[in-house]
Image 1 (tube, rainbow, N blue to C red):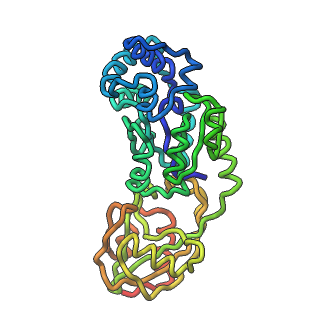
Image 2: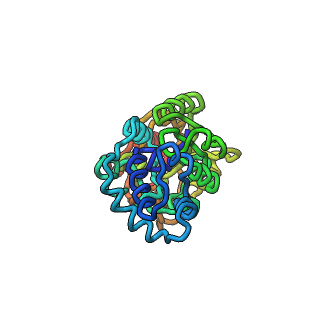
Image 3: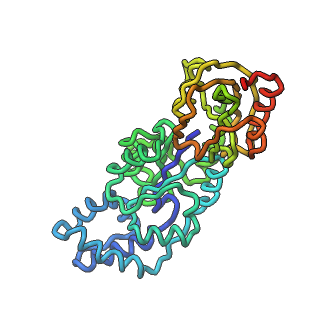
Length: 348
């Protein structure tokens, strides 16, 4: 299942086709150019929209056209509406911890107004609007937010959206609720095509249940050899305190994975590594999304207490284990810490 979804806006999450056609015809009429009916517009309109207008009004600058288009859009009689299933799809993403973004060519002021009008702002980690050619920004979005392309999909209703996804190396999902006709979208061969967001949700949900396997992870209770242990607090675990660690990569031993994860998350090198226990964490309400983790828990020593956290944690503490037990710990960390004390294997 995808962990990151980048959404187009117009025709994907909201229906603004009516007012866009009204505003486009107002611009065309101003220059005595033939207007377009709905079907003609859907077959001819394309992104970047500068190319569309260059074809119809070749001697008019895009700046001049936009100066006419914006007020005509605001005065359109046809309202902008949220598309069916939009809120349900976004709520589903939030429940599963899927990171959501918007990449749209829509005018920034109009987009921001709609974002608040439909109460959708809180669903998105970041939004990008007024983007003439989305291909120019897709790589920046992936890099800025550290999105793995193999875990990411771009969802849109136009051929340009599919081309943008392909340009960024992410999966392309076409929805048939917007501007381009199905036969036009088919020419660019989207990875997935769905009639609407409800079908997409069902499809992804089914694939998620079918393909999901328990995830093997490693984590360590790190001590300084002098009686103090390291605790970190992370948003992934509901801002509770815990230990650093992460997933084992394919072809990697558990010890190598532990050393790598600790170094990445804390900049600490560890030795004196000792296996303590294994735990199951199945859809823990403390974690940011439903997951089945197999937690391989270790005890390890660091010769340094100079911690540098990456973006997975907010803060850290070195403190005696008895004091650590007084923190608001996630359940798995509390069980590990109590087991270490029970076995009396922590150097003092």
